[in-house]
Length: 543
Ligand SMILES: O=P(O)(O)OC[C@H]1O[C@H](O)[C@H](O)[C@@H](O)[C@@H]1O
Image 1: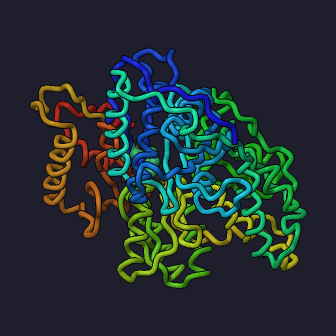
Image 2 (image 1 turned 180 degrees about the vertical axis):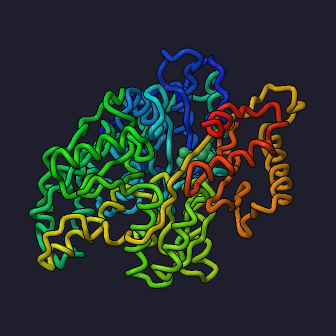
Image 3 (image 1 turned 120 degrees about the vertical axis):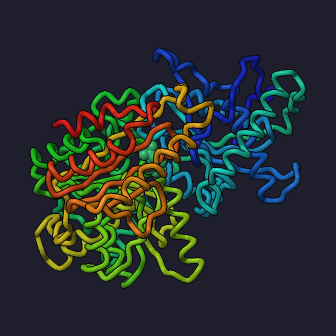
């Protein structure tokens, strides 16, 4: 390890509103100037303070005194601000007297894994890990996710870290922090951790295929990394397993994302990988988001395996292994998925709230009260398995699909991805499925000085009341967020966004007419809320 170049933790007179950088269980901000109306608030000094605050939080968590020297890993996705923030994190950690292990380009799940891997030569396991990423957000944003061996930090932890960071920042800006002695500064090491992490994935597939060296031999699988951090999957996972990968695209990291947004929920991104599968006559296509905690697939016929379909597919695989288990999902999953999980697969569908952390924590809670659950998954492509430490790992989800393909090949079949397609046979899908996001104008006088959350809640209460008087509509008896209603052969859910002043409305229906009827019912109930922008809903019902 090399001694770090030190100095005070931070030194800046710019004001930073640290608590505004919280985004649920992540930290997110603007790291690059140039977009109008989006001033930089995730500066290097702010980052140093956040990194130092994480180490202080970690010491406190471990009930260790200030003399304990921690080892913390840092990695990043392909964003253009990655290097400067990695340097700032390194400076913040080493100045606080702790050691840092830099992984360079890495995936979010790999960062968590580095808290578990035992390999002293590579300085592993680490006490804590920091991933520098803003997932699929535009190029000017960036942020942090933090892990310990217990998993990702939760909302309260992030708030605690940001409060500590604010204090550290204020104190250092006023020159109160003493310059660290050279000897007490932490040291920096560089480790190619993605190779270690990827070889674990390779071993997992080999093991499930009866220790066959190249279980994917003869299969053509292409990857679309969207110029994020997922390109490793081709050279470090698929090729060693024997798959042909020609036609894979956008594997080179490029933080300006010149081809499409790396996001399996994005229509353009899904179209792009689908086209690549068809053009290359591949057996399977795999797409990752920027930091590889989310993924989706495309079968050889060009059928997208994302959203409800990917949950159905994962549920089918997990329920084969754990009959009767509960599958926890987010709130915008379809009624068809419930029927599929419960009637076809014999499992239990627990539709919970939006937010990957909410879904994962709920599955952990169910297990703790004696209800067995092995899969927690969101329509966004976040999916976590109990067998994989409840980590939402897009690459691991794809490994589960590869296991299925490998097993089919071992049986001598040459049916490509049909084995996967067959698993979702019978999943009912609505002809119309839309999400319309209704913005709340936070400065509108109708809020009467209150918060957008309170306003949103009153919209939801009013809607619930209106629906209860409509004989064609029925409020879902079991629902954990917003107002979910069935009627006209379909359903809708109006809820508050996790982070934004927005009420997202999801509608699924057997026809456009039915979807419009559901939309009109919402519109009639919310129209009197003048701070709510219903333009998009108006447009939808007038089609
Ligand atoms: O509530 P929304 O605005 O639709 O956002 C919901 C989404 O927020 C974040 O991006 C979380 O990482 C996702 O897990 C969640 O699904």
